[in-house]
Length: 154
Image 1 (cartoon, rainbow, N blue to C red):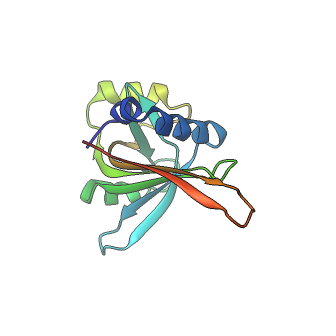
Image 2: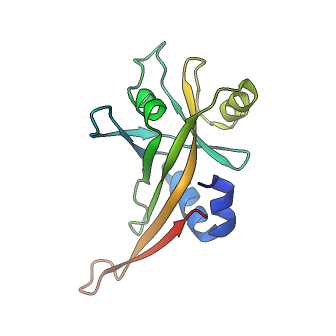
Image 3: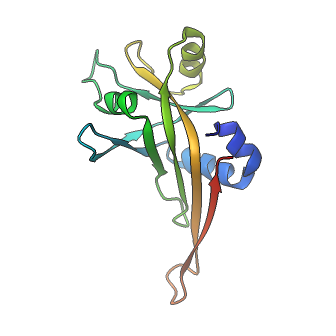
């Protein structure tokens, strides 16, 4: 498993594409594993703090608690996919999520969020096992093809 910074150091172009996609639309789709083994998909806004990537998951309060928080706590496996960019650019990450318990990290992530993180929200750090980026060449032409890059964490 690796941190966001380790991915960015090893594959700066891949990390730059991910950040570019998130600058355009700051949402990615998070897939988790339900208790019955089936997938669950929800939009999330990744948060970058201290070289690491996090998500805040609704814990109740003003809105209904998100069931994905229990998915991640029970079985930390996740897949994260960005909305396609202008050339149908893609970014996909997968790995394991770990709930953040310490207040210092929680405060740093909350400050870095760029959106409201409520006190009852659960914060998870996303460790990265694999990353993939892709874009399409010769779009809308007979010889259209995907150019994909893969990175397995060391």
